[in-house]
Image (cartoon, rainbow, N blue to C red):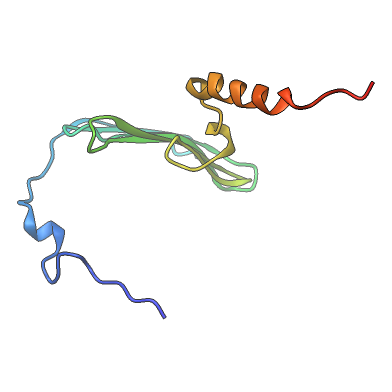
Length: 125
């Protein structure tokens, strides 16, 4: 059995900080009424959302989009996604994926490690 509780006791995080509505810097929406649409939002704190929809062959809306938001270290998280007949697929450095296992900065270290392993290997022919 596992149990969890908030670390700050009864005081919820949103009560500890004063709430201030954020200004929307960009708010663009377009719906053509035939299943084609797009929208884009940008807030003053850097949250950015955009998507484009087209009708799918099964009657659904196919959507390509992205969203980004600021992280505590000052960088931005960005997620790109597709939702269509094949389901929802998201792509981001924040989502564990084999795509981002290869980091060019680590290449010299990985090559050196491979060379060390091969030093003891001799071809039999």
